[in-house]
Length: 95
Length: 493
Image 1 (cartoon, each protein chain N blue to C red):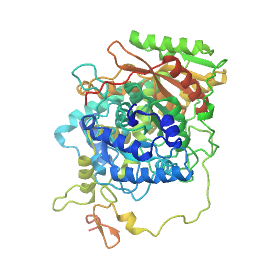
Image 2 (tube, rainbow over the protein chains, first blue to last red):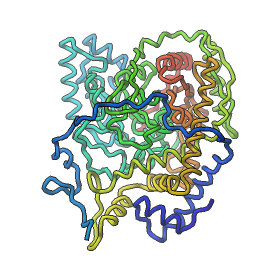
Image 3 (cartoon, rainbow over the protein chains, first blue to last red):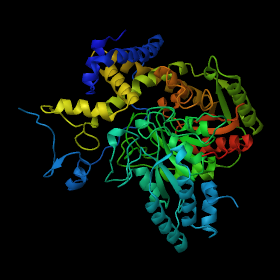
Image 4 (cartoon, each protein chain N blue to C red):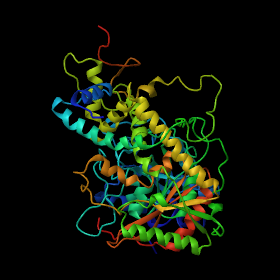
C-alpha cells in the first residue's frame, strides 16, 4: 500500500500537527519507507491467534470508587501556558 | 586513592557506613566531575544546591544509624522522570519550562532510600531514538573516543550511559521501550538492566508506549544494578500495571554459582551480515558461561524477524495516543497564535513547533495505523505477532532454559551524524536484539564483555524469565566476572 500526498495531509490533520504543503511529498516518502518495513508482518500466519492485550497474565487491579485526590487547583494550573481565575484559558472554541 | 566519583554504589555504600567518606564529599566529587564534562552534554539540568542539601541530610541519617540502602549515593536521573519542582522535559521542546508539582514513584523511592539527585540527564526526545540525536538539548556525547569523531552514547538513555561511563555519577536511572537502557549501556561499557514489565512503577515517568515502557538501573557493575533495582522496584497503587508481588533481595541472589543452569542461544539472532567481531564476542560469552558450569543449548525463537516491524506498529500507535496530551493547554509550550486562529490552529501550531521530526513521524505513523480501515491490517496484526513472539519465549523457558544469551547490539558505537542521511528504518535496526524483550515483557540485561578492534566497548545481553531478575543478575554477574571488563574511556573532555 502506498501513501500519497493527500493521505499524508489527512494523517497530519488527524494527528493535529501542522505540516507545510511543500513538505508533504517528503513526509509521504518517509511513511512509505516505514510502512514498507511493516509490511513484512503480512508474511506471518496469525490464524487463530488472539491479539495481545496484556503482556503479563495478571488481571488489572480494582479499587474502591472513591475520591483519592483533589483540592489543589493551584498545582494543577501551575504549568499552564495561560491560566486565568482558576481556569485553563484557550482561544474561542464556540462562536 | 581513586576519585570518589569513580566508586561503584557497593564500594561507596561500604565506605559511607564505615565512616570513611561522607555523602557530601561523594556528592562534591560528582558535581566537580559534572562541571568539567560539559563537552559530553550529558547532564542537562544541574541541581547542585539540591544535591548538597540531600547529601547533608544523608550524612545526618548515616550518623544517626538510620541509613537506608542508598543513603548518600549520588545519582543522575533521566529527564523522562518527573521530579518535583525540577525541570522535567523528556528531551522535548514541547515541555520546555515544565516543572512538575509531583515526584515519580521511582525517584520518590530513591530519595526515600537516601539517594542524592545530581541533576537530569539528556535523552532522545520522548525516548524516541537510538543515538540521543533527537534531543532538544542537542547530542549527548560518548566518553569513549578512538579517533577525531564524536561518538553516540546510544539512545534513548544516552545522557545516562555517558554520565555513568564518565563517572559523573555513581549510577543513573534509564527507561527502556525497545532497547533504550541496554543499547546505550553496550555502547559505553556499562551495565543496563530492563526489568520485567510491571516490576517497576511507571507512575510519573513521561509515557511513550505504555505497554512496553519500563524503567531500570544503569550502573558500573552488575551488583550495583541489583542494589539500584531493589530501591526502584515494587508495587504501586498509582500504576495499575505494576505487579503486586513481593520484591526479593536481588543482591542476595548474587551467589556466584550458576552450575547446572541452562543457557539458550537463539539461532535466529545470528543475523545475516553480522560482523565477525560480534560473532566472536557471542562465542566467547558462551564459553565463559560454560566454564562457569552452565549448560549451553541451542534454542529457536522463530518469530524474531518480525519483532521490529511489530514494534514499529505498536510503539507509534501507543505514542500517538499518549502524546495527544501535548496540546498547549495544560502544560508546556503553546505556539503564538495569529489573529483569528481557533483551537485547532493552536493544537496544530503548538505540536508542529514543540515536537521534533522523529516524534512527529512516529505520532503520525501511529495515527495512521490506528485510523479507520487500517486498524485491523496493522495494529491488530501487530498485536497478534506480538503474542507469537511472547509464545516463542514461553516455549523456550518451558524447555527448562534459565536465561538466553544474545549480542546486545549489532555494532559498537557509531559517529554522531553518521546516520543522518539514512532512512529512519536503518536507525531502528539498532534495536534488533533488544526489542523482542520489550514485546515479551521480559527482563534483559546488557553486560560489557569486550572491546572491538577499534577499542570500543561491546556488550552481550542476557534475557531472563519473567520476574526472575535475581537469577538473571546472578548469571550476569558470572559473565561480568569472567569477562573481566575493566577498560575505561580515556579522558578527553
